[in-house]
Structures are given as C-alpha cells and as structure tokens.
Image (cartoon, rainbow, N blue to C red; front, side):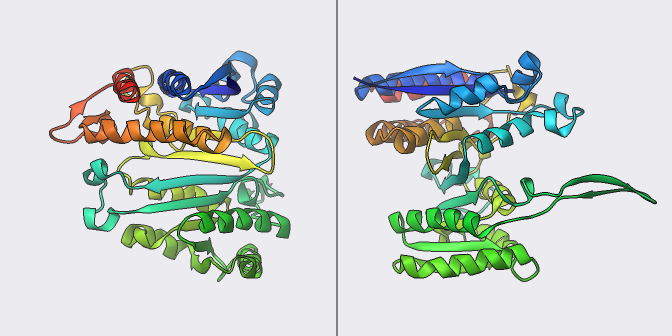
Length: 359
C-alpha cells in the first residue's frame, strides 16, 4: 500500500477545529482508495509563537520540507498585532512560502449550484462561473526591498518596493499558460501597466511567451478594470494571471462569487518539493472554539492536495462530491445559512461529509 507523509499545520483560531474534521475525512477516503496517510503535526503562526517565540520554528520548516505535502488550516489573531512585524504570525506564513520555494498560488473559484443564492450577486451573473486565479507568491511588493519606516522632519515615512525580475514573471506566466491549456484555453493577465514600470515588464514578458502557447488566447486587463469585471461578468474569465498584491485582493473578491470565502481552497506550488495546500479564509478568532466554523474550504484544500500533490485523482473527486452532496441536501454552517436549510456546527458538518463518503 502506498503511504504518504503529510505535515499538518493547524495554526490558530478555527484552524484546529477544521483540521480535525479534515483529517478524519482524509483517513476515510484514503482507506477506501487503497493508500495510507501518516501525519506530522507542527506549530505555525500564533501557536508557534506561544510555543517557541517564533512564528515559523526551524523544526516546522524542516518537517514541511520532508513531507509529501503540507496541509495548513489558518494563522493569525489580533492578540499578536502589537508584536514587531517580523514576529507576527503572517510573517511565519511568508517565510514558509519562501522556505519551500512556493512561487505559484492556485485559487479555483467555481460556483456550486446549491449555493447560488448565498452570493450577494444575482444568480444570472454567477451561474456557471469556473475560473482559476494564478497568483505569483514570492515576489512583488510583499518581498521587495528596500522597505521600512524612517523618521522625517515632519514625522515618519513608510515605504515598500514592488519588484519583479524577468525570470520571476516568466516562471509564473508559464504556469498560467500551461493551466489554461488544460482548461478552456483563455488566459487574462492582470497588471497596472499604464502607470507602473514593473507592470510594463510583466506585460511584455507575458506577450513574449505567448507564441509558445499558440492554443491559448491571451488578453490583458488593468487591475481596477479586472476587479470591476469580476463582479460584472465573471463567466468571461478562465485563468487570471496576477502578481502577488493584485492576486491577493482579486482572489478574495472572487470568493464572494461562491457565496462565502469559507468555500475556497488553494494550492501553493514550487519548482520541486512539497506543495502547500490551505483554505483562502483566515483564522476567524471571533468564532474559534465555538464549533461554528465552516470546514469545507479546508476539505476542498485537502482534495487539491490529493489531486495535485499526491496524484490521487479518484480520492480527490470523492471529497469534492461529498461536499456537493451535503450542500445539495440542504446542510449549512452559519456563514452559508439560508431559509429552509439545516444549520450545523463544524463537527456535525464533518459527520455529514463522512456519511456521504461512506455511502
């Protein structure tokens, strides 16, 4: 029997709750599909700060590097906001991505028929949406230097630098083109080339690579127009290729097409080594420990892990079908609750998903 080693990072807030549900489902689907999973649970984010003083302990990073895949729940809490930036939970996440060389973030956004009414947009606008945001993850303004804060004669000045090199644009663009080839063959590159030099380079490199992918239709949008088009006519998009900052914002906006950010999974991949799979949502500290969390984005992230990281397509599909079936049956967590549906907590939603898997 094939066995895979998974590094689990429950993190903060609702993270441990949705991790427990997801682990139970992973064990069930692995058993049914003829492989096994072993887990190495490690602290990250606020939990790691409490345990070690660091948001990304060396032991955690080493465990991630040695795994077949890494499954992260959520990090962050307001209680750490007063710490210096380099000691905050979010810095640990950035360091984890950099330490694993994860430069490509994939965020699928697909309308689930049972949740059409959960979105704030009209059903005729979001029906049939199936797009993929491909976000560059280790460059851009989040990592560029110089950055910092300096004293001035009148107070203080803060600054960050948006930087992309040719090779950084080329490698993420290739990922976008290759994924577009596997989907509907359309790639829309998002930039701000009318005002930013770095975006001018981005657009030039995408256009230079385009002839290598003659079966992909390429278009460009400025980020402000892309944001508008996402809520005006989202079905027009297949693959959206973006830099780090723009992708961070647009993928969260796209979350509302599904009705809740609690439904969106993601994968972060590098040129080699394990991928990192995590829900797009945050740690929701306001409901942590109350059994109110929606575990489905974590479950769908696990499905992405099975498909992309472990090449277990049938098991991945089984998890996704269980999610669809439970929603179609009218079961909802609080963030998705609608008239006529049955409200469940995190653990009870996990039980329903498990019943679907075993049926």
